[in-house]
Image (cartoon, rainbow, N blue to C red; front, side):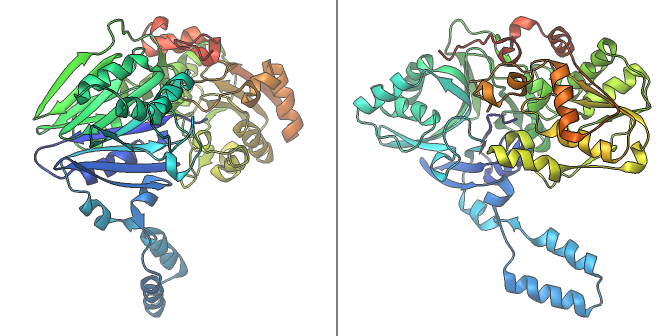
Length: 497
């Protein structure tokens, strides 16, 4: 599965913040791995560094080849073992570009990690994007997906704006740039009500760092403080790592401005309410150590696993998970069922990216083969409960069943702590068509089970069960009216058509 993106920003009067933004982006890297960028404001001017790839690649550089060769020779002459030399190469193949971050001096900055939901995965679409307002630059990072944008695009073109990218984000840039308002905040307040869809924004203009959330609260956005600094992020885990205190969420329909050592908060939408928070933030997207709406994601997923054990009990020898996203649910399932748990029944390589957020169908199909490997001694001859968060395109599960079959397990009870995903999403997840979803081809659990047997040749007992939507909602501690559940129900807070 792909998720929409991650945004991060800092306002400080005491220090240069580019390095902090770098470390903040590393913490939300799971939200997008196609590109990354940082824009800093200094004396009213913007300075940026953007690039394709993960944060460490964009802001990293290889150790010079001649230096590596010389070090290898020296290690060899000293009698070091081959594995020591390989370890050295892994540790030193890339270092942080201190020079780049040193050039990005300034106390106000925003950063972005991207994966493409609208717009191709190309250099031109990297964020934060730069725009012009009354002869002054501003930068904007966007998490989410807009709908009904064609008319807005045409209006901006009529005003003379020339689009340079294929993203919906540039439409926000264009609307601000072509505004007749003289004041930037007034222009922004005029633009926001015109936008439909999901958007959590970070904006950098002169001495301001601005955060904005759409009126439904579809994508998360939180903020905190650190010794007089203000930080804003898609997820709270980035604040934790930088030693900041989480203050709370940017509310749906709210704008928050950090300027002159103060925060100003007000609602740009008069009828805003938490009525569209993406339920998949709790199921898959967010990091387990993040807090969303005062609830730690790990604890919510663990509770989902407990409810899954209540709804679909079974007899088995061991509970394992499809790591890492399935881990909390497996803990909960084992706790409630009393079946022993081993989190390493299937080992996950962390050198391989998140399958869901990788662009390209063929790449998604290949990654599970590189990502997972069972430990046969732990599972040989056992009856297993295998817990995962969701089944979207049915790329990962066949590979898992095949691996388990080779390890000669007796039975596999697949337990999924989300309901079947039957509808595409147009609000920031890369499942825009029915054709991409497994449930379009395999409408029932039985059809999926038969497909798995055909694909893997597994002849042992094989079952599949999904957690009910009511239990998913119950595990969050929030009300059903607070969420977008469109991928399960077909009902969205904002309709595409």
